[in-house]
Image (cartoon, rainbow, N blue to C red; front, side):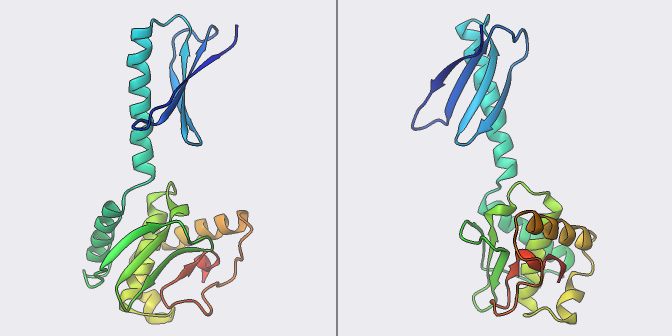
Length: 197
């Protein structure tokens, strides 16, 4: 007897598919598959046990999703903390937000109005990588371009080389250009290929 799927779909709740398995004895597990949460349970569970365990597992998946995809307000708070720690609090963006329309750039900023945008592709990457991109954009609020004075603003960040290498590797794996992609872009853009330059 294999897994028997049961789908729960509600407008207010995420789509949840419950798969009962006769081979599964004690463990319950869950994972995200696209827009659905798949919960694997032993076939012998009662409906009450199933409801309780499925609710717990869905809650855990949603909490993990929140950690991996932080909100704009949390991103703005992180920008404030990074500015205070590495830039003496001098970089004060008017807004910091995630965007989904940056496919070849990790981040961008418009110094004229103080806005910073980070690509949604960074969500789920290590925090020190996201911090690097955010700090990079914050530095552009103080210094446009990528000259020596710009890079000196980032010297204090301990994961600078590691984060740039990580992003360069991701860009290479994604088939994006790996040379400096900032030529001709806004002064505050960090391209996918710019990780090393």
